[in-house]
Length: 159
Image (cartoon, rainbow, N blue to C red; front, side):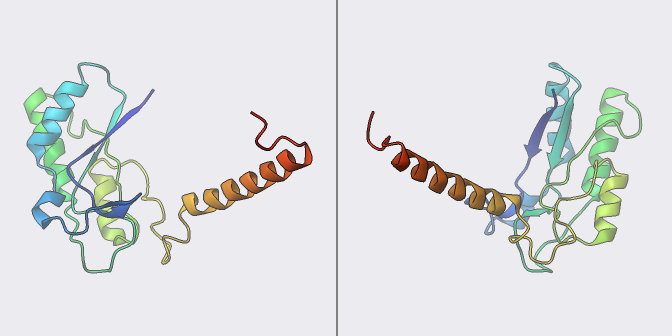
């Protein structure tokens, strides 16, 4: 089993949680916070990944509104490595809210320990490609079909 945690605040709006008005300083995780999480997670296992905030934003946002600082990931790697006597890059990071980010920032984030590419990075209309919107259509269709079947079988308001 893999555990994924989020450290700091990821800006933007997702799932009804709106962090668009956060002070910019809240969008950047500190290396000490990453080390604290590492120290405590290591007590329960080694299968974890950290979504440290480095200026990233969930959902749709206007270009130029965010300032990614992937060097935070590098500094966190260095801090944890030195504090616990580990290899150069001991941490695995995940990049939340990477859609629409500059490719150079994505490449730096990967260099500093992010595993994989942010979902939807190459889509200009991120909300349209959000899989939850497609799943919602399937859910509505399933509800309609079940209601039709319940009526056919005289099973409406029976229980």
